[in-house]
Length: 375
Image (cartoon, rainbow, N blue to C red; front, side, top):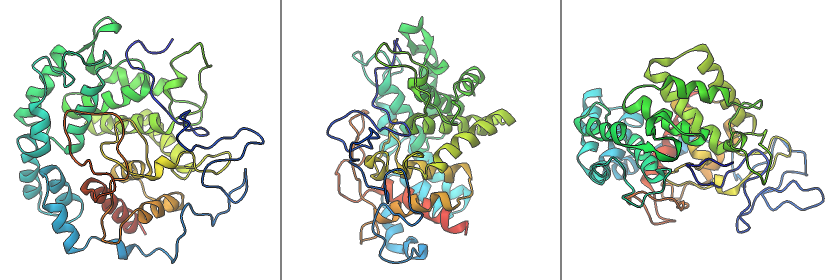
């Protein structure tokens, strides 16, 4: 049976992106035309094939942030500013730390912290039993860069540790995780970042890694409607990889964790970050559009930003994904908010789809710099 905690989520694996009839997905049904960006022919991919029309050779220097771009990024929330200082302008460590400390009390970080209830959650009395609003709120606080050593963060995580449980799982503490690896990858990262690494949860995720190198919630949650999946999901795989990376950085580096991460990273890289390994087709065109927060959703920019953060040296397998990022750039040098996911937290950051997004611009610029610096 499906997890008693987390409701069914729309997921994508290597060959199929979901069942929403309004979304164009790759369909490998024999004899049925594919409704995706096509490969040169079904089952074969040209090395020169591109998802977009590239009019001239890629010159990354043209996409380096200019003073006007940096000024626009810095004229924003502390959560954006401190990451710009760290990743793009290379300010002194004490300057970065001073700006980062503002996240706890100002702007988006201060607002989201203030909306935590005394019982530890963000969804109020009517929050679903899977505590998804709380999970997503905690992940956003981590993405904002809330200093885990700050008094605000300590008070916040103490409420979570002492008061939040998964009731359908015999009141299992929230930070001990639940049953699905997509959720547990997030919780592993949260525990490692805000409090302490969870060794048992990390071992559980290692046991659930699939033969192809990734993870899939549908590989561990049986359903009367379908057999357990033997193929990994981009969504779940990235959630777990982010969790294992945070776990390693909290002092739990080991050969087993490093090996599992490498296999998971290769799962993404072998598929060029968005293509079916079997057919070469784009698995889900939504992955070529960028949003923030990402919640549990995979997209090319989130995948590349993970590789950058993990210190992976980029190779030719990411080139096509890098071109996707470049093609999303507007002529004014900024990246737009391409879409908003249906999940919500009690905080609005950037909400105007089609308008310039500081989050997407920051992440795109640091990914392009990571790629350019490796050459």
